[in-house]
Image 1 (cartoon, rainbow over the protein chains, first blue to last red):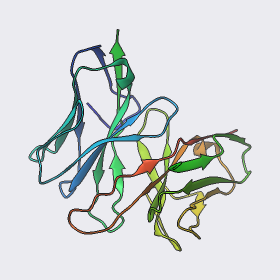
Image 2 (image 1 turned 120 degrees about the vertical axis):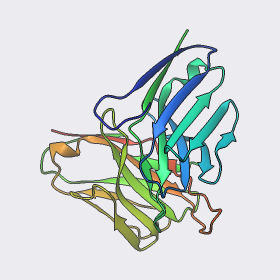
Image 3 (image 1 turned 60 degrees about the horizontal axis):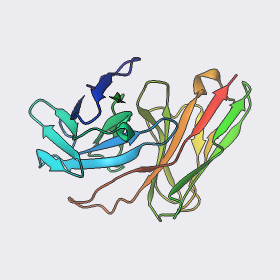
Length: 113
Length: 117
């Protein structure tokens, strides 16, 4: 899962398996969360989002789960493919007027052949 | 539709030099942001703008300046570059309409890799 620090958490999965990437957020007032994917040498790319009034949201091969009680977010990727190898960030939305995003430090997902 | 475009892609500066990182978006987004990303870390907000003529500091603004004279452009200025500013810089934009159900999905450029030696 994600944590603040100098070492990027890593997750290695076999191609075709499911991946679960975890994220702990800090602000209980955050009302909106986004998962981004960042491939090497590129900018972050939006994957999926979820509001705090939901506990689950599904997209194409991805599912985000939100547990507000323990302030935990997870991203599930079904049938992981080599193209899924990247760093995954969760971001929480502040409730301030600027709607700023606070990013976690990311998890490096490596898909093994 | 190019999205968010950043120039240059790479730059090497000497200590004390100045430069401007360019960012332009063609999505008519009202919000624009500048982040820096250090190796193995998440993104930290430097400055943001909620519309033309309005800018505000983020988490790490020291050593940087911005301006937003048009909706499309949001340049980041580095004055007196220091080694601590070696990083990858990302510009992002979003459309924020306000309201309970509004979303603020930020779209990012490809980044500028800056080294200060």
